[in-house]
Length: 158
Image 1 (tube, rainbow, N blue to C red):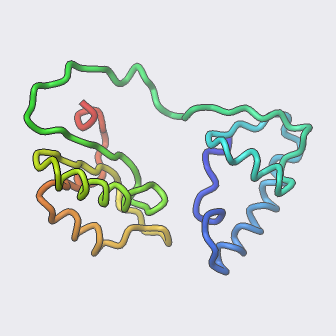
Image 2: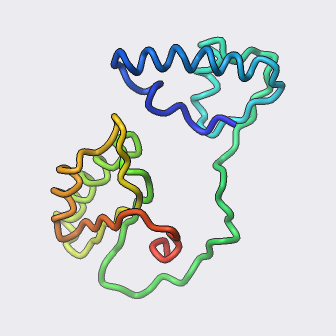
């Protein structure tokens, strides 16, 4: 199961290039005898094929996510509220769209002052992180709430 290619495949630094080369070798070795390879992202099988990590002999299966028990979540009636609330649940990484979320929040809030933007997820110390100063800057806005890491996201989804 390939859930995503992540940091090493998305950057252009020397370190990322070296890590990518190592990962290609490891993926080739690990998948050499695999008959079926599962991918979550639609572009990843193409990348793996182009890099000769997988061959036409490998059956590719796309899945639409993993580790989410949909019976654990439920739909509720929309509460009657003056505010519209947006929610992003992710690790606080640039690649997850956090910066774009902040910019969209600013744009929407400028014409819909009742809108609220919640952000739930762990701060992630990695090269692709959102800088703490930027997270703090946006968190100081009245309409953006960084709620940190939580064990159960259902109350926020509700």
